Image (cartoon, rainbow, N blue to C red; front, side, top):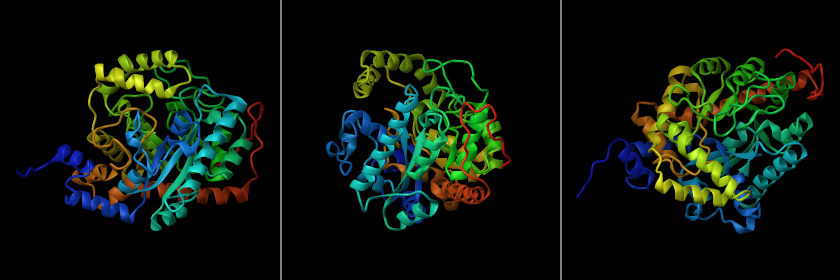
Length: 430
């Protein structure tokens, strides 16, 4: 008996590896052969620290990591099946870690990313520029880029920022889930909740943005408050990114981007790389998360301190008794549609947050599923060129513009000597 699959049913079958002759999947795969898909945010390094204590001999990324308990979303076979051209691996530092300890944590995260690349020559290659991403794609390798998640990881030192840049870091997420000493974060009840400290960026925070511009590192506004978003857009001389965020008009989560900022982003030339985490995708899931899952997660963290694997295992067992609302790849496409509608097709990218959550939408469960999402965009009427922009062309254009701004600024001024304590941090025009 034959079946005719349409809409989401078709996408889910394709994501599972069935119906590969479907013309939309074939077209999506052709786009991925011609254009590197670049994922703006993947927390593999956090998983390697939490699960394996950064001992790479104890984990095989050449095998299917989805069979682990709890499952992972990233490994080399699934990256290949997903047609992935590049990934920003996050050098994540928990917001509870401060000062010198945060700096050590940062460089340990960066180190493990370098070591993962070194263990898989021919499959992964470290990339710092748009040109290097494209060269990796032409050679059949996945470009590994590094993004720093959380400005507190710098220990309030621009010297640390510069050394991280030398080590390959290509963006800095200005905040994580807490305000830091120079920038305000997007907070939500149950995770963190306190009044703004800076109403955006302090003078030192503004200088961080300027030094990022001078280094050619991208300013990442995911996790920041709306006031911080506005302040950074006023200061930056280069396009900014939201490495893993959605549209607030579609899901009213503080982590998402309001329309007024999307319009400013269009003028800036930056992009929103749309997140796959269900709590940022739909109102139903956000409300369930706030009402049930976040309180349970907090309880389990107290029950299993310093054991995040047990926390996730217990949370997954709890979810079987308290199932969340369903989300699917269509919900991700809805966010892409909205960013395109308000800010234009040049303002859209993909930033999955794989390895940063225990739950992902149906049809987008891991890094092998990107062709199904691109096929959904084609089904909605996107042209091949528009899909290529979403997949990676927009991000590569932003990287190139940041590189050009850096060349200009490095010819105009030396490295900043501003400090957090400085009463008169330098104030410069763009």
